[in-house]
Image (tube, rainbow, N blue to C red; front, side, top):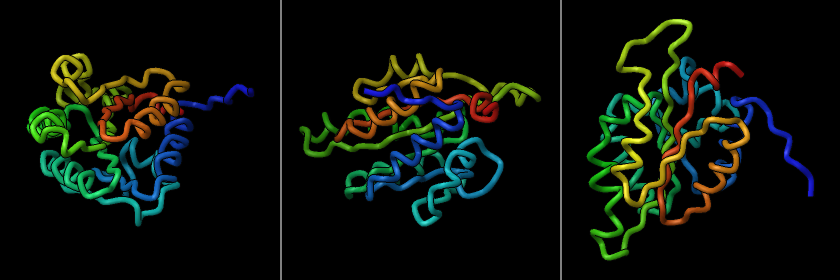
Length: 183
């Protein structure tokens, strides 16, 4: 068996997005995914625009749409450009996505992959509402949705592959803007 060659954090994110896009039901949904300016955009340039849905700033609605798409046979990749912004979708996350299987006697088992990014603090500090890490709080709150920090480049593709293969279960993958922008 050959060892996998690991690239930079950004290169591994691009590989992970390409891996997800091989599934014909995958659709990427989020803010700033079709237009320059966000770390997520930088990792999605090889994905056709026809597989992307650009959303307005309406995080609760965005995750609700992703849950609905999942129940309709799609694999939504729900992208929040900042972890801080994802907090606006906590109702959908905690009360719906995480509990749907229990609330429906296992009839509905959504499979949503959530990408969220801890904002960079350099070269300019963006303020408290743009760079927080809520990973531990989410892990404590969520019973079914798994939450993983992607701290090292070598963790990225395996964790996204694991999330892809968790049929009927959802995952949050926490990325770092500074590492994406750093290479």
